[in-house]
Amino acid sequence: MGTIITMLRTVLTLTFLIHNLEALYNFANATQKYIDYKIKYKKSYDNIEVEKSHYMNFIDNLNTITALNENSTDNITIYVLNKYADLDPAEVRHRYSINLKPYSKVNKGGDNKELLRSDNGIEITNTNLYDLNDADELYERYVTKHRRNITKERDRLIHYYRFVKTLVEKNRNAFEGKGNLALNDKADAVKRKDDFFY
Image 1 (cartoon, rainbow, N blue to C red):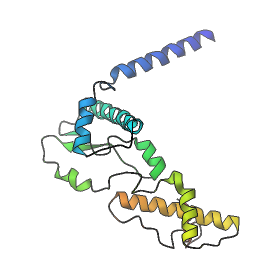
Image 2: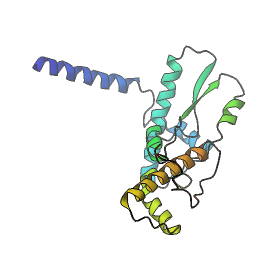
Image 3: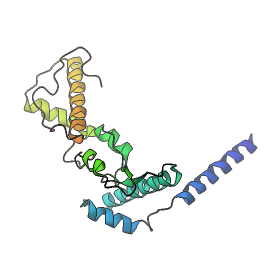
Image 4: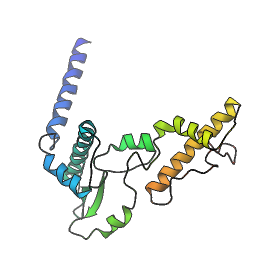
């Protein structure tokens, strides 16, 4: 049993080392690319800790497209970073319920007008999308503003879930450039049975 555990530890250690050796970009050597990215997309951050987090996401995404391009058999297109390259797609999916890629697939040497047409989403900041981590607080403000008086706990929960579903819909529509984020007094309205599931 001890031999198997030792072998597993060795494999895990080697896997970790190989993964880190394969990473072409790191905190030290991606600086100029990050500076160019920040200038191109007019990025600024609240403080050094926030910027460091975005920089680490940028490095991860830079390594991702480098690996995609190196392993691609397609000689017509390449992967390039886009304006979301400083974000972690999994975190954005969790917090805002939208799917984004921090890179785009473009034609080599082409004008890439299609990329510009399809990149009509809004810039993601915490000021223009609803953070689902704040749904409880948002719902309380909504209830107060619209003078909701839902006394039964089950009914309140159903309306809360419908409200969260509305937040998700608003985020997705805004991200796709198809609507605004304004909430009206029907944001928690349940029109059909099971209307609150998403």
